[in-house]
Image (cartoon, rainbow, N blue to C red; front, side, top):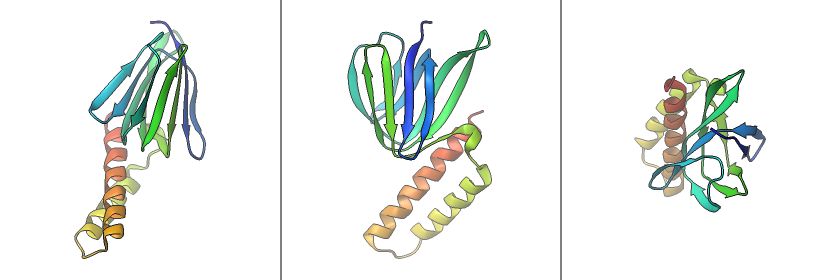
Length: 137
């Protein structure tokens, strides 16, 4: 497979910058795959798992990243992914994610304002996404 340039940027830091041979992004209606020389496009990214494959030491390495909302732009064999937050699978603390999930579930079980309820739903979705990525191994 031929490589393309990829930059994955979270609001607070770059997560990945380099050559990539395949990328799968979470979009509203499922997953979308990108290979070298993909046609130009722009799309929204939904919370989920970003799955990229890079060539390393004569082989291939898969890198999984839990991402939040954002966008992707493909142009001239270059891809940029901009998301609010992103964590590589090796950065995710599984116990903390489990704790966050339980706390969010507890918050959802109590009477809350709409804003507090929506915030608890978002925390639950993020924790579940982080667990999905870290347990995907």
